[in-house]
Image (tube, rainbow, N blue to C red; front, side):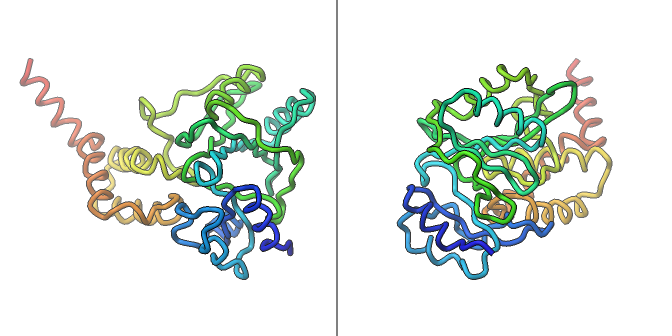
Length: 269
């Protein structure tokens, strides 16, 4: 078992916030053990008291508390290898970690912290996806079991992680896919919902349940469980805000709600 306490000290020396991780519902070390992990700072005494003896992995908090650290999470084995190879051939310094499933994390430092998002695209004729992890999010990092630091230089400075990712897409021929739901709504049923897209994700998921005529009470029960399992900082969502979002989605997406809007529209004409 790697010495996570020593690793935490090293991350603190870099000005980054280490996050003690335990197993998620799939048994992988990705779940923060400390409830208020998003409020930690490198020199905060609480950072050293997160329950490191119980930890099975270590994460790093992204955003302003870690010097505007951001990570491009590439959740595809072949694309991650292609991005790594491109940076390695460039001869420029960069920081890269391989994940436990041979995916890739590219570390960057933004000028100003931005909100994270899920990205999807088409590359070499198939769909690929991942995340831009930024303010208020964390990523599992070496020496978490299975995670390997392959390029050890400081994170590259960029204006924004989004612009950096756009440049990578252009260089590798990745065609971005517009997110479903219209506007900037995220896709439904993500494995891990970033803190910055909690309400939008809940709205999209509630719309899908309403569209298939799931009873409202059952939808509330299912979505509450989904928030507990898959939403970062899901406990910060108030009960009133949670149910108000679901009611709004049901009013918009349920067959009955759509029929009522159509009737009002016809009356207006």
